[in-house]
Length: 117
Length: 112
Image (cartoon, rainbow over all chains, first blue to last red; front, side):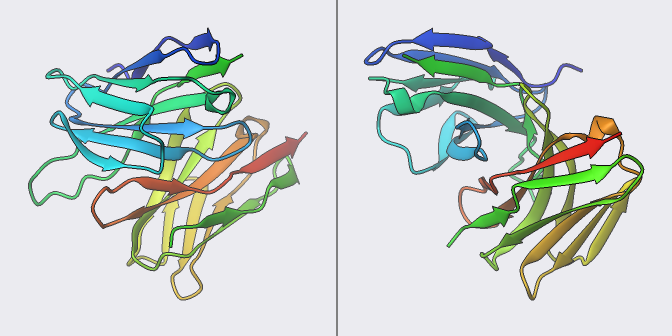
């Protein structure tokens, strides 16, 4: 089975531009989360989506937005890019269910390396 | 509040055991995880422990949890050069968003 896939792998933008990053979860996984990893630091939580609804948001400005599609893939959008947005953006999927089963493992994709000049 | 701390660097010789330590502050953590990140790659889930457990062993990996001191450790037995990577511990709260809070990572260098 394919793991979490992300596109593009690398991206270079200039300040003020916007960017769209894409993620396809593992087949059967309904929950997608986005994380930002700045060089030398651990990942920071941005968003979580489940069944096309936002279920959690980290401490990021409104320039960051996301959505999830009926096939459970997801997009992360960042507007008005700043130099500080340069980072590795990671997508993670999990097989979250609405039942009593506690499913918790998150599986990460390879990330999209965004460079803002 | 949520805060996860790790030491920055650990160097060991091939064949020795490695112990990577982590402290967390939120007592409502339910699951604690260890992830491995190799250069230019995403995060690989190595193992996890539920907060009501003290120890978990998985092949060369042993996780110890001291809930009283909020201390988590990962022991890698017979460390190999392929184990060289950055190791992140992460906690997951059982409240609302279920996001992971990561430490800043420990770079493990294995010398031949």
